[in-house]
Amino acid sequence: MTPARFVTFEGIDGAGKSTHIDAVAQRLRQGGATVLCTREPGGTPLAETLRELVLHSTMDALTEALLVFAARRDHLQQVIVPALARGETVLCDRFTDATFAYQGGGRGFDAAVLAQLESWVHGDLQPDLTIWFDLPAVTAAERRAAARAPDRFEQQGVAFFDRVRGGYEARMKAAPQRIVRIDAALDREAVWQQIVSALESRQW
Image (cartoon, rainbow, N blue to C red; front, side):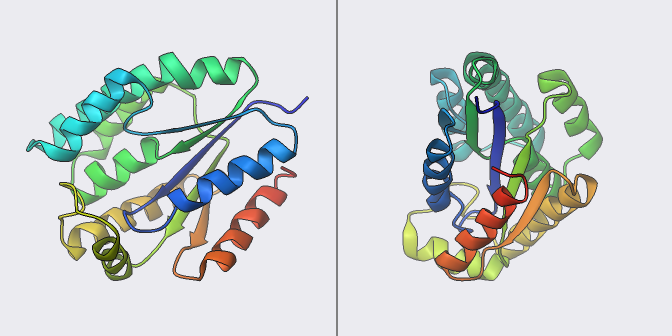
């Protein structure tokens, strides 16, 4: 029986992570896993409502962080923890690393406060693997401009996303066994091969 696993996908907007989640799900299902795909902010009706507020309403960094963690708490209670308890593999598009990157790195909000919120909301629960799609902010901006109308975060300038990228790098350095950096500037097949290597290194 395939054990429960919690895998998260991270990266600045435009890094291309979302396009690979379905492929990872298919690979793991072929290996015998029952896979649930979800996202943050979001994943439950309440969390999706909070997502819309975070993406489209003006607020300060603390309010952003509180809303994101409130959405995360509901998501964990209603979706993630029950799925893991059933032995399923959960693939989540963003998780707490994104909060440290966007509100901590991008907004410059106090990381100690974020760490306290992290402890309150999910304690010792961390992903078994985090795949970080790393991409220069300028390249990501070019991709976003060609893909869709921007939300409140995507309207931020390159300097903001440089700080977000730095926030992700700091998280990777703090948890190198959990977070695997993927060079997302390469073509799609080369990115996929890096992901496969990360999975194979764990015998997944």
